[in-house]
Image 1 (cartoon, protein in one colour):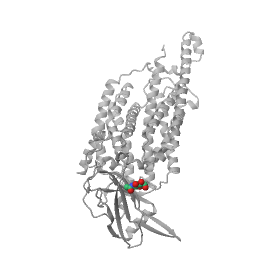
Image 2: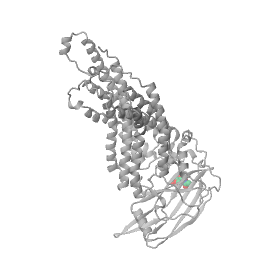
Image 3: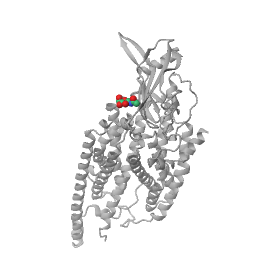
Length: 590
Ligand SMILES: *[C@@H]1O[C@H](CO)[C@@H](O)[C@H](O)[C@H]1NC(C)=O
C-alpha cells in the first residue's frame, strides 16, 4: 500500500505546480485547526551536531513513546523519503489551544545498553529535530560535565513547548528541552515529561518562517559586496571581450580582403595564418559525437531546470514546505526532458550521427544514472550505519518509474522533433574531406591549458555565493535569498560565455579547430575549481567527521560539481557556437 501510494504520489507531481502558485495543499496539511483538534508533534531525525547529514531515526535511541497511538494524519512524500526525513509520531497528546501542565510521558529503567547508547549520543553532541505543523524545533539529547577527570553524563528529560497561535493557525513554536536533567547511572529510573503552553500571537501565518531566516548571515555586507564585485567583473569582461574581438576581427577582415589583391607569390611568402585558415575544418563534427551531444542535451535541460527552480523559489517561498524544493526539481527535470531530446538529438543529427537511439538513451539517463549511482553508493554506507539516509525501496521504485515512464518517452519525443526540425546541417562553411594537420604551437595555446585557465574567472565571480550555498546546505540554514542566486546565476553565465569566446578565439587563431570540446571543457572547468573549493570548505569551515558524513559530503559535492560543469559547459558552448558561426559566416571563402 505504502509503495503504491508513493508511486502515485510521485507521478502526481502536477500538484506541485499548484503549490508553486503559493496555494497550500487542500488536504490534511492546510494548517487550519479547530479548537481541541489534534496537533501532531512529529519526531524527525537525530544525529551528531557537526554532521548534519548523518541522521538517524529518532527512535534509534532508547527514548520511550507517549501513550497516544492514533494519528489523525500521516504525511510523507517522495522527496522527504529521498532526503532521509523520517517522521515518527511522538505519542504526545497535544490539542489546539489546550494547555498541558507538566505531564509524564513514560518511564524507562535504564539498562546497560540503553545507557551506552545515551552516553555515546551525548558524547557526540547529538541533537534532534521535531516538527509541529511543519515548523521545525530542535532539542539536545543531553550534556556532560567534567569534574576531576570523571565525566558525568546528564540526559534532558523535560520538553516544554510554547506555541503561539493566530486565529486558527499555528504561527510560532518555542521549545525548551534542557530545563530538567537527570544523571545517567546504571539502572536509573528515568521519567520523561512534557508541557505545552498556548499563547496568542500577532505573527502572521505568512511570516511564521521569518524567525528562521537569519538575515544577519545572508544579508551580510559580504553578500552585497560579492554581487558588486561580480558585477564589476562582468562589465569589465564584456567590455574587454567586445573591444578585443571587434578590433582584432576588423584587422583580420582587413588583412584578408587585402590578401585577395596581392598576387599568389606574395601570399605564399606572406603571413597566412589565423582563424580563417581552419574554415574547412571548423565545422567538422566534434570527436565522440554521441557523448558530446548527450552532454549538450543534458546541459540544456539542467540549465532550464535550475533557472526555473530558482524562479519558483523566488515566487513560491518553497522553503516553507519540507522537501518541496526537491519535488519541484524532480518535477521540472521530468517535464523538461523534451528540451534535452531536442537539443541533443538535433545537434547529433547535424553532426551526421546515425546511432540516435544510443545517443538518446545516453542523453536521457546520463544525469539520472549519475545521481542514482551516488545515492546508491551512499545508501550502502547508510545501511551499514542504519542511518535514516538509507533510501527506502519504495522510493527507489518510484524514481525508476519516473525515469522509465516519464523521462524516457518525453526525451524520445524531443529527440524525434529535434532530428526532424533542427537536424539539417546548416554550417556556414563547407567541411573539407581531409582534416588539416594541427600546427605546432606554444604550450599555453594547447587545449588543456586553455581549458584549465578558462574556469578561473567564472569561478572568481561565484565563489562567495558558493560559500552561502554550501553553508545553507551543509549547516541547515534556510537559504532564502534566491534573488541573489538568480543574479549570480546570470552573472556566471555571462562571464562563462565571454571567457569561453576569448579562449576559442585564441585556439582558432592557433589554427586548432577542435573548438567544440575545448569550449565545453573550458567553461566546465569552473566546476573543477568549485570541487577544489569544496575541499577547502570541508577542512576549514566545517567540523564534519566520520566515514558516513565524509563520504556523503564528497560524493554529493562531486555530483553537484559535475552538474554545474555540464551546465556551464553547455552555456559556454552555446555562446561560442554562435560566435564561431558569426565570424565564419562573414568570411568570404575562395
Ligand atoms: C518565542 O520566543 C520569542 C523570543 O524569545 C518570543 O518573542 C515569542 O513570543 C515566543 N513565542 C511564544 C509562543 O512563546
